[in-house]
Image (cartoon, rainbow, N blue to C red; front, side, top):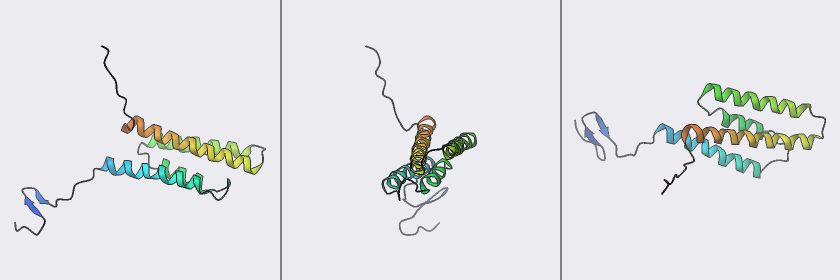
Length: 128
């Protein structure tokens, strides 16, 4: 096999010299980037009635790969939003509750990441 400049032939193919990015790392980067974007969305709301918050949170939840967990979280979010919509309170207060609900849902996604992917690490020191 003839080598091209910058590409080294190997027994099983061509080595490009480009470091691989594994799927878990790419997935994690994508989801954590969503958290950063959510922070920016909250900082730049078009008022408390900004409907983007709900759709953005649903989009982040949709990135959870386990069907049951994803669907349960979406269902819980929608139930809570419907409950808030039924409250007889001013629209601004209702919208504020929806934002808090969205933030809680984002917290649930982070909990999922921690439980299943191990974002947080706990250091344990043995007894002396």
